[in-house]
Image (tube, rainbow, N blue to C red; front, side):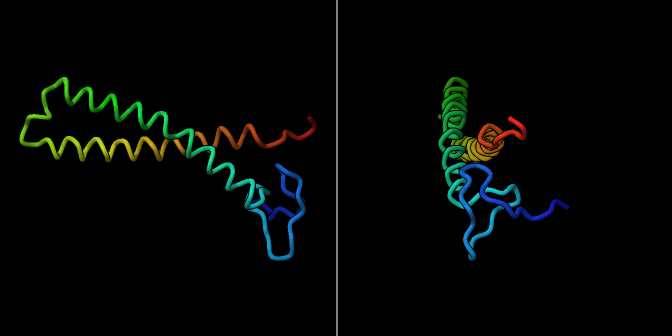
Length: 105
């Protein structure tokens, strides 16, 4: 298991107070909140594109007039939610790797 981070924040360099502690990667709460906010904003683009594509596919297939329209729309919402969660996680990891300073650089 990795040892607890004891130095300043790896991103902004701010020292941690007595009641503050870094996350497992040595980030302060403010930098992590910024990272989560950015990754959430980035994740909306693939989610909206997926939802529009799914709606176009359902409309093209004539499934909006079927008895199971609610099922198709619920399936689309569920798949869009999964798309959002996956896209946010990927964006989180990509942005985190780009924000973390490299050792020796």
